[in-house]
Length: 281
Image: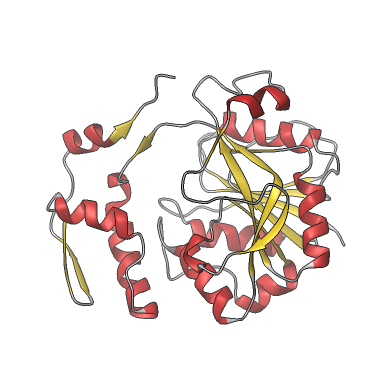
């Protein structure tokens, strides 16, 4: 079976270049890379690679994550789809390991991300050196090798995952009723569970997550998160992104009562700046 690697990007040319560099170093090159450009300025351009690259332009406001991932899958030709966020550098063994896993298992398969510091993988890098400094995610433990089933669908993450193309189509892709940022990936994990598609965590290989400053909680996406949380609650009867919503509520930005959520006010610039996490490592 053939494999398409899919990524979506908006104004992250440095991160995209390192993702492509990582793919070029993989033991098994992908059959293609599909890039969905969500309105980058300037538009995405890619230098020559050892595998085909297809760029799809998606001009929608904000970060249309669900629509962009669906557009990437629609453009892909491979039997297997490996989704990589643009800030991921795939490890040498990732594409081969994911291909083997998807050949053996008809499942939704997440691979591990190891987090880099702000000075790591800037320019030339060596995978062995990155392994020495990268840190695992604190609440998503992966097996050292092989695969294990994860029964909590809420732990699905769209950062690095593989799925057979036919299964993605049967699930209907990501629900584009979730517009902008937030909850579209959790909804996808829940729908996979409803379709009895196992969620597996793949150990032994994955990707390095390139550093970027973050705003925690993500106040810049407040309106999107409120809108998408309302939709998710209506579909599944629970609140997604509970930690973020609790933080918004504590700050007086939103109000929740029963199934209802309302946007009380937008954050101030000072609040956004105060939530910005900038590492000095």
